[in-house]
Length: 317
Image (cartoon, rainbow, N blue to C red; front, side, top):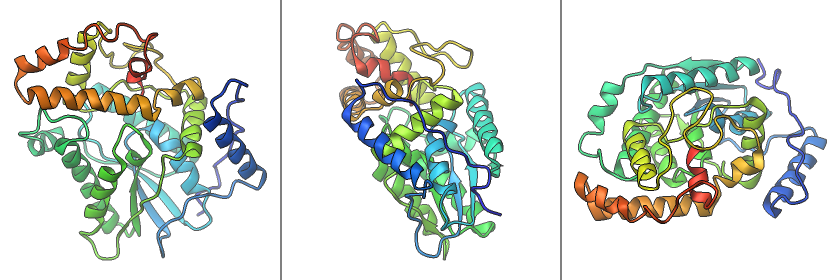
């Protein structure tokens, strides 16, 4: 059965004249593709017809699912949800159920894997204070991609891929390395590596997220990310993260404006955030008191989301 039978494409948001040049150029390229029948730009590895796509959340899935399911090179795309890192359970259920609804709307099979946080915490032991993009994140990607690869091997898939690769908040090389390691465990299984962070993909991701009014998560997902994000917010006198509900701790609860949402994931915003996170980690390590002292450095740097893009981007992971 073709994957694209239920896929439809909107024109996306009408861009204002003040839109940044990258968005205008990306929009024009997308428009041309739509006029030509929206042939997918994705390029699967050789001999790949069945793909198991590990999904971290619906916002990161939209454009990637669209590209894969509009490809005439693939016979089947199945979404695989295995994310035992997400904490608390309420946040996990919100992200999972939204992802499931999106797949049901498109007629795409959704595999709901086990939620086993105990195994995740066991594997992350000793890395509780590592910074984002550090060793803990590598282990987290490894754990999820290993489970994805096992399911793919057991169920006859040709390749695995992950929506973690679409987010500029993630190190694409770190994500891809985990994917390659996981696929290498099984003969004949490939990892699909591609640039999923292009301007066109980023714009489409936020057009789809706004159109679907996806839930805007305020942190990566794990309890350590939640802890560190709230510590940073407290030091900057920013409201703490809210789980669920119709209001976020900071900014909008749901995606609504593709350009504003995309700006929150600009490379400058991402780079500065991780620069500060790494500075704190290097200064304090796992010493709680030293971490508190390091956080005080930022107390007077940023007060409100209106004064700095880095702050306003903290509710868009």
